[in-house]
Amino acid sequence: MKNAQRLAFATCIATLILVGVGVLVRATGSGLGCPDWPTCQGGALPPGDRNALIEFSHRFTASIVGLMVIATAIMAWRHYRDRPFTVYAATIAVPLVVIQGLLGALTVVRELPPAVVATHLLTAMLVLSVEIAVFVSMYFEDPGHARYVARALDSSRQRIGQFALVALGWLAATMWIGGYMTESGASTACSGWPTCNGSVLPGNDDQEITHMVHRYLAGALIFLLIPVLLTAWRRRRQLPWAGTVAIVGAALYLAQVLVGALNVWYTFPDALAVTHTVLASGVWITLVTTVILSYYSPVGERRSRALPGVEVAA
Image 1: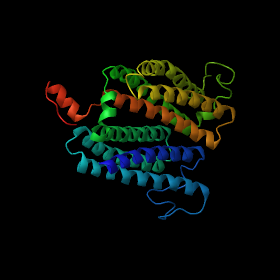
Image 2: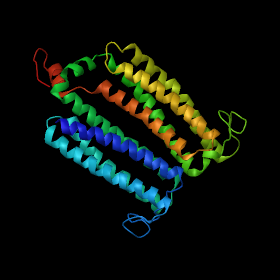
Image 3: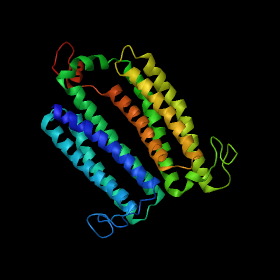
Image 4: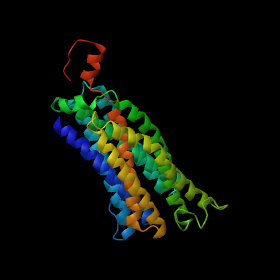
């Protein structure tokens, strides 16, 4: 059981690394370093040029993540067969990662259409979300964590989850537009920050509009994050995870905005471009984890509520 939890957690980390490597591919212009799929320039291994190596590293990391997702599903069936949510979530992740791979192939074959690239990113975030759900459910279902879980089930938690769900939907749109912006060449359409070429509104130009829509969405996200963070902070004494959510969520959002500004000022250097998306992924992880912690209840606890006065082991 512990090994299953470790594998699920490692799969979450590997998926986040995959997102970072994918951003590096875009930032360095290496998306067509391997212009064919599944081979790379006709071979099983890439040639020695930089772009091919970067693109192939993304494919290699994606393959590792795919195998880890499958292994996590197998572990869930072996150790959590009587925990339906854990098994279903782990199983759903398998076709999701297959779809993610097919989108990656389509991205190469169609020569990097911005809409497909953006959807590829968002699908990776969905895989990451499901794997987080698998890990949290495994952790909650472990009898060894019963004391912590009992404190984490305070009835006030669902209010935080409601706010987090709304913020997560907004962030999904922000990240999709961000991925589209990067691949469409709109990243450099606006010089200066926070204005665009000296104006708070974009000009009559598709790339300026795309760029500024991303900024507007990212800026407005703070108004949806504030209720999450404030409610979590106020519930920090009742919920052992709420204070961490408030502090980490605020720090990640502020860092992500700062790095976004630095990207514009320094014309999107590779390191800052990768950091920007990884920080946005950190905000995503915070919100997804908050939603799961707000709504998930162990099987034993649900049975206890269904049968008042009957104590059932988790």
